[in-house]
Image 1 (cartoon, rainbow, N blue to C red):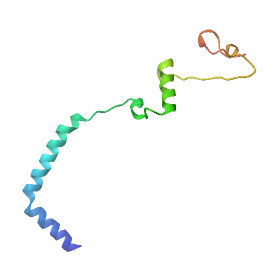
Image 2 (cartoon, helix red, strand yellow; image 1 turned 90 degrees about the horizontal axis):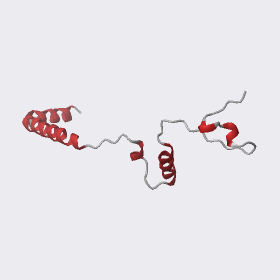
Image 3 (cartoon, rainbow, N blue to C red; image 1 turned 120 degrees about the vertical axis):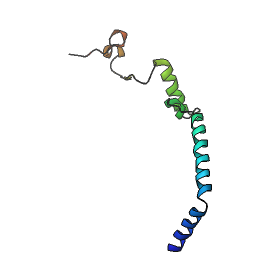
Image 4 (cartoon, helix red, strand yellow; image 1 turned 90 degrees about the vertical axis):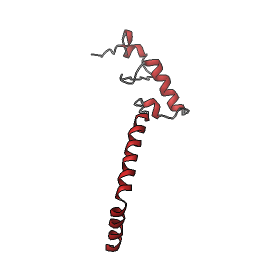
Length: 95
């Protein structure tokens, strides 16, 4: 183990100019290329495009606007939806 560390330190000491130059070139290259990275923050970009569930979700968003709303879907066999929800989609609480 000691022999390995001595070999590594010897290589670093002999080629320190090459190591510093290569590091500077890599930093400059990375600094230039970092501005080409396209950052997408929309959740739709992360979802698979040809998935049927995703297509249903996209259709839902197109119909109702955004994902920041709370949407509640009611299904009932004994009452009509109008008895649960008032005019204009406003919830009517029963007394």
